[in-house]
Length: 115
Image (tube, rainbow, N blue to C red; front, side):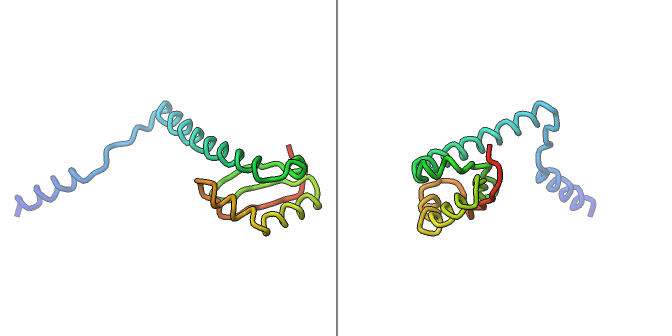
């Protein structure tokens, strides 16, 4: 019986995950790596955005972020919001999804003061 319990404890020890490095340096490295990955994705998206959205309309819009597959856009006025909504429904959203390599689930447009 003692032999079985020792082999069981050995197999449990072998299956354990390696201990994580909880140092500040490791945390900073992880945050920096994640940030670079997100910046690259947003940069690729912004290239498509500039290519597909008419310049006249783009002057009244500000992309505020892309998180969890949700693109957040701030429109300077209700008319700019309406015009973007029409474009998205007419096929712009589908084209962005087709050409963007990341995840784009939906576009959220708000009216407010853009940057």
